[in-house]
Length: 173
Image 1 (cartoon, rainbow, N blue to C red):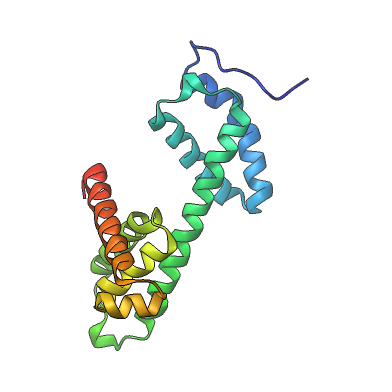
Image 2: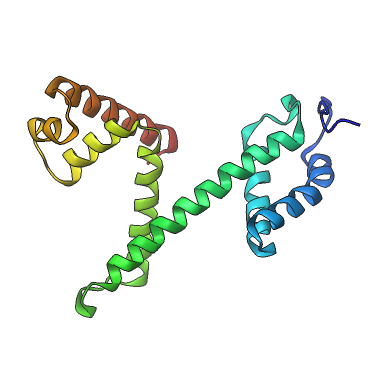
């Protein structure tokens, strides 16, 4: 028998969850080798399903859930890597300059939002944007660094700026 099933039009999230949570949980536990992490990823996966409004159009529930779960795992990995790098940087600061826990959390959340914001950019566009914003390089310097023309750098910066503005509008940032 095939795992390929079409979701019926009258399916509720409760029945979808009840039908698919167990195997997703087991699959994630094998992948992550941690039932605690699997619980978190499964919860985030179903949360994305609920907020996507695509429940009635799912043609292959297992494949759909695996795809969403993989994206959740990638997001968690990136978020953890970013947090680790941030904490390592903080550890190098003198105690007197250490921000409060509230400020650290706010800074980390801001870094994660910036990471999400620039995630959709191509590599050269992202590099040009970061060199412009973080290193304060001129377009000529960025062009030399990336081995592209100044007009390409202008296009990269314009595209990145537009992308970031649209992201902020979409997510209310």
